[in-house]
Length: 363
Image (cartoon, rainbow, N blue to C red; front, side, top):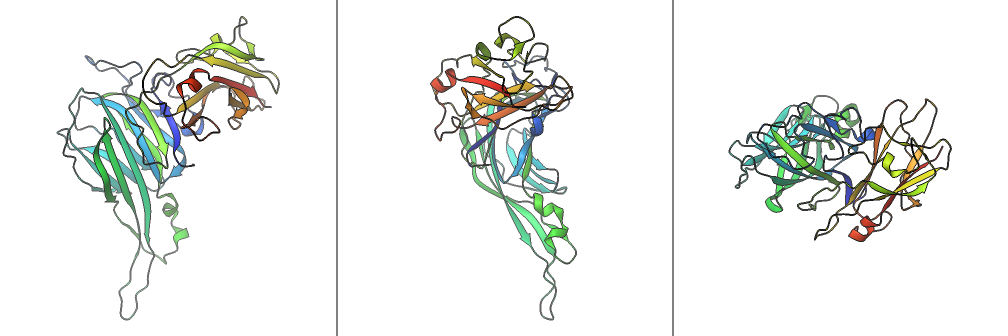
């Protein structure tokens, strides 16, 4: 992934884990856990979700920043964990139990704890957490004993550099924590140990089974938190290109603006080269900057034949890569951008408000 990359963002207003747990964002595997029942007496923001989510990154990375708006009734509950199932690596924000947090790095079942924050949170209060983690793989090769020196066993571990922000305030800056060392007996051949290839980050786990959460983002290869962001879903509200065939009527955008989409209304392309595009709602008035966008398409194949499509921004020269919908099930295809596509500058409100998203059948 290039630097300063927005990997994913969602308010959970668009993706509803309770009803769409089996409808994955392609290979990114945003999956719902158990729960998702509103706790009696809680006050939900629009789109807030009670439950747990696992976000599998498209690639293994060594640096991530994650933001989540979160509250809980249980101060012994953990909100964010980074993992890699291949190596057993994990890095967690761990509650102490009195509203403070410590940080834990683990490898294959063993864990070490870091510093404890001086400040604390309160239950049933909204907080915006941002956690930055950078991992550096450490490796000690096997060195046989000599007549004068003892044998040194093969060992590997991760050094974790982390920063933690709460509502934009730095609670931890420059934290460093080593995972436990793992030792293998053998000839020191790195290739014989597949774990060494996966000492990095693959998954983000979010958990609010005793609370509620919203406004989630992930950036890769970047240590800069985005700040107290709000994720705003924008839905189609007008037609642009109109080469696909609506399931009913002649207005295209009304077939694809369900909140959230349910697959009961849609537009169909029966030949390669057909394009459909839709104007979007404007951003509500606000003061601030646009930190990125995530365009999301909801697609399926109507029969078992082969077919490919791509999404595009305004014109089809600003396009995503090809995606290949599945037959018999709907899928979310998403494309995230920290900056305006194919430029190096951040989005402006005007660019967002004039945005037209399209989809084209390629084959």
